[in-house]
Length: 188
Ligand SMILES: [Zn+2]
Image (cartoon, rainbow, N blue to C red; front, side, top):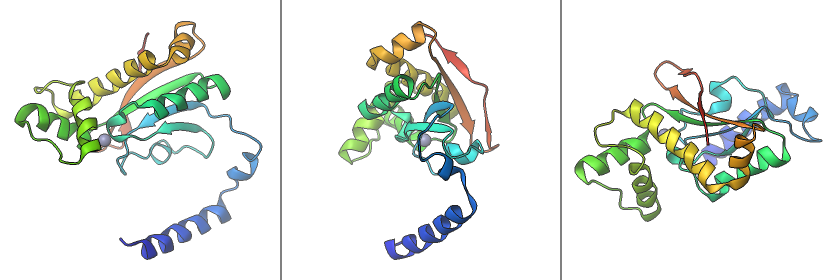
């Protein structure tokens, strides 16, 4: 879809939102999200929609492919915990992840994407999983590893979790059932 058509669709959707949703008005003075969550870029894994969440409820530090933790994503969690008083952080993996499919391909067949940044990310994801994993096991294990990575990269987040100020968990969203798993808590 080209930009002119995209703009038409975006405007149409936004016009409807601005006319029917009034939540944004009460959020102008500040945000008090319940939870900070990171999930994959995958268009099927839009957490706000999947969780029927309202505007202002979920702080999303990022949606990097494969939930790959980078500095700005970590910064988002630090901000949420230290400045927004968020007490719960979640790394949400998902079944059928294209990035993890590529990471498994790299492990099994040595096949890798040619694009440089994409390759680096897929390579990083491949370090979190084993060649014999199925995609669902890979989703869980990668989410756990990303949670550990968050704790490793951020002293403030890790300290908040150690001192019980905040909790960190992982879950997996099943794109075939539309359901999320229970949350598995991660300890520092
Ligand atoms: Zn994905």
